Image 1 (tube, rainbow, N blue to C red):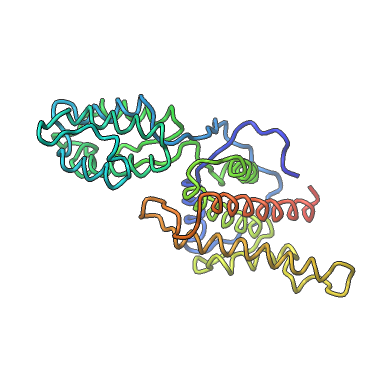
Image 2 (image 1 turned 180 degrees about the vertical axis):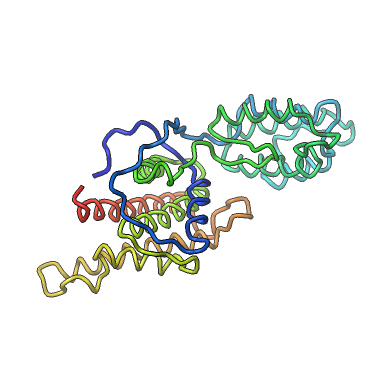
Length: 317
């Protein structure tokens, strides 16, 4: 059973992905744990979009006194991310300053956060290209970097020293184990912001759940195992493949169909994630509305919960 009360939530999966890659890079042989590992005392924050007045001030400071990328570069960023209407810049007067432009547009994004992550990522990319996060570069100011990191941290995000943004409070399966998966399931169920990001996170979670199930059964996993084979092996171990159900039993035909549908949900989440990609601003695939993406995420959570609770029953928990 999923725990009724949880001490925190998480909305990121970067460390879990590194854990999975490390464990599968050369293949590994898992063994059933005698006891669940103790969870590290992290505080799991529910991230808001990575924009706030503090973030506006912190990123704007990189442009103080005319520093940072050019006015034309900022114009391209604002147009590309959909916030050109919030840009107060007058090219004829070359006013206001770049610092003010950045602050005004980020403030507007905090009120219309649908593409806020895209905006911030584009600004950070420009700053990285300008050497603002490169140690030793003449444009690098450690104090500005620290101030930006603090601002993002208070919004539930983390900014690396080299200027890459990710969600804070990440899941570490090597120490969090089952509790981390449960927390991520609950977090995704409640989340409503950034459906494109959630769609990718749901795929990562489903992959982690399948690997967790196989680890609990002591199954060796090759680095060449793809998502479909991984899920087939996990379902086979749990005895929830459609062909493992007695179709002649009362309700057997319906159960077989439901189990097949549960796999189709996982499969389509994986395929949508592939269409979405990671390098295109986390936009939704054409034809997928935010409402549909959230439906997919919640259905994926139900499938993941089914796998974990089935594992609990078979392990006698």
